Amino acid sequence: MRHPMISCLPPLAVLLLVSLAVDGIAAQAVRYDSAGVEVVTSSSPIWADGQGWRISAEPSIRIGTLDGSEPYLLHSVRAVERLDDGRILVANGGTGEVRLYDRTGTFVRSFGGEGDGPGEFRELSGLEVLGDTLTVYDRRNGRLTTFELDGGLGGSVRLADTGDATYRVTDYHLAGAVDDGTFVFVPYAFDAPAMPTPQQFWDSAANLAYRTDGTLLGPFAGASGMDMFGEPGLGTSVRLGAYSVSDAANGRFAISHGHAFEARVYVADGSLRRLVRRDGTPVPVRSDLLEDRLQWMLSNADGDRRKAQVRQRFDEDVTRGRIAESLPTYRAILLEEDGTLWALRYSVPWEDTVQLWDVFDQDGGWLGTVASPTGLEIRDVDSEYVVGVARDEYGVEYVQLHRLAR
Image (cartoon, rainbow, N blue to C red):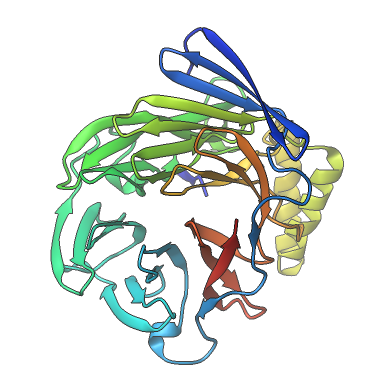
């Protein structure tokens, strides 16, 4: 069974302690440099209390409806991107199409639809805009399809085989472009191999770079992975385990593996340029947290039989050691075009907590945290807005644009 995700540095040479005075409050970052790799560790945020960026509580634009015309009915939104001119692209998984809306949220046109023919998709798994060209990845078909934003179909190419019998192109999704001719793909799911003795381990597979014509360039920027548990004849994911999250934009690729409050930033040739960190300790998985998780699972199980199965599986996970020692640190990464990095702190699904993003500037310093509006899953960030997906009490999805005050 495949389980989806929802390097060592050389000896360090040069040490630089930077103290930034912000309204009388010192924010420190320790910087190491060795062989062109900069390591930036922040002990405190640059923003003082009361400073920092704010996301508006109410959306400037809201796309979606409970009951209305088809272009505004959204289901299983896979990706959202705001273009430089304010137009918004929405990958609507429920209909297998990418929809384009103008800067006011008015529907303009759609690209694709469900199917295997030219310009059709089986599973939307990433999109990228380069100039006036939209590229969409269909994971099930392992195929890249291009469209002109004015509506014309460009063409389709299948990705070359990965060369790995375990991980095929259908096990990858599109993270983004690092330049006009190179796309980065990251593993979507992992096998659950048996192990000689019961143990937790980090399972990983190489990230891959492809040309826009589908040619495989090779491994890129290390690997992505997730915490797994194996024993003789059995393998599975670790409950509450960590997993890699990543994003690509404007010549950069950022990735975090979820075991520490850190991210690695690579450049277009795949070399590591910077490691950014902030002080912090992952939350330990204590017995009270496990009990909360069990009660949440039981509340989502229908009927006594199903509840009994849930409890039995939970007890097996605890007994066999299939539970992580600590919660993941980050569960999403976003890169702005200027290199600003946003990292979403992990939160457990059974608690209705404010979503907090750690924001790191272009030089790797930890600016501070930004809170998401309640219920908004941010998918894209630019200099003026964040855009994401929200759901109402009926589970109806909406794409929302919120102003970002810097």
